[in-house]
Length: 512
Image 1 (cartoon, rainbow, N blue to C red):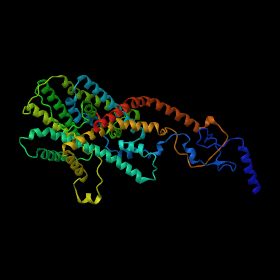
Image 2: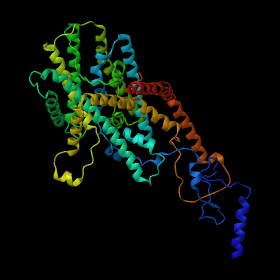
Image 3: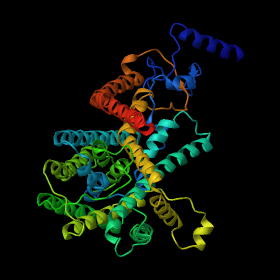
Image 4: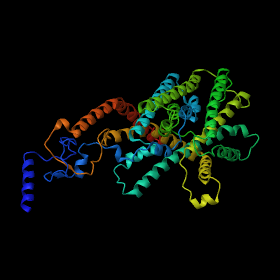
């Protein structure tokens, strides 16, 4: 019996001596499930188990490296609940028409220079928004924090959960801090605009009383916990309407030579001028969660390409409308005017409208801030939203900063906002597409655990070779579609961002 088994083994080895043993995951693998000999069918089959080293022979990273994609689970994990297209368009348009737009007339000295800056900033804003959207779709992420977590923590194994969790919390902290600084700057600018109107009625502690009163109003309006709330949506629409009214009244006053320069944002800082004000007005956020929110709607096109085109159309349309609404403010610089008195009714209306739409632009910023961790026991005892109350307290406290500190905070807010809008998407694009293996499209990441047998080569029927050929073809097509974005990143966003950061660093240290 032993001799029979021994002779059978020798015959099986002799039959395979002339053919090389190739891993089933190798590109030249002759494995074919239709012609293979099962291990149970013959004792002469040579079993070759896949090794871990061969799994990466395709040099592609797979979607399976990430969590399994479940549409219902992804919708439940969205930072913003699914929103209709009109609401997504609203939140894409609203960030353009805030403090940056109202400061444009006071910083422009040349009409031609202002127009060039306006169109360049609008084009870069559309480009950076599309970069965020393409990165989110490529990585299947629903927030910018998740994208940067993928960039930073990709090399950290999942076993080191504490380190990964610390990185995630740090990213959320930076994002939340920027939005708190943004809200405090809006509140400070509102107080700067309303104080001259209240000096006669409240000659003592006018700034403190105004800040506390406006902070209480913000707390009431910002009570909802989601951007899908009707209260936040109506507030955002109202802010855009009030901005349009402010623009109309300001243009009328300018044409009739009765306008008085608004004292909004007295503590400008050293980084604020006409160019940076326009760039800041086109600095945006929430692009990634808004695109994911639109994709989560059942009424949107089901095809992935159609959803992408749908969101890009909304993004371009919002930028065009914002450009048309900011353009009259730049044109006002070419019209001569004689400053009027603050007591003029039309100037009072301009100030009130400016304060109103700035205040109403704060709730969407506060609602989008990630909630602070509050212990469950405290939440059970206290019915008040302590996270929201703490955030608003920080906003009010920062808005009461002394002038020197306020100027520094305004510069810091602008620098962070511009870097987050223009430099960070370019940096993430380069890191993911140039320093990481491309995510595979059709090749599975792992090899089945069932042992497979090796037989004589038949490349024409090899699924591994066919999959690899198809994978390379699809990867080349993906690379071809990405060429335009690569050129834009290397020739536009990176040079302009680096030049801007060098200029800002020189201004902060007093070199120029």
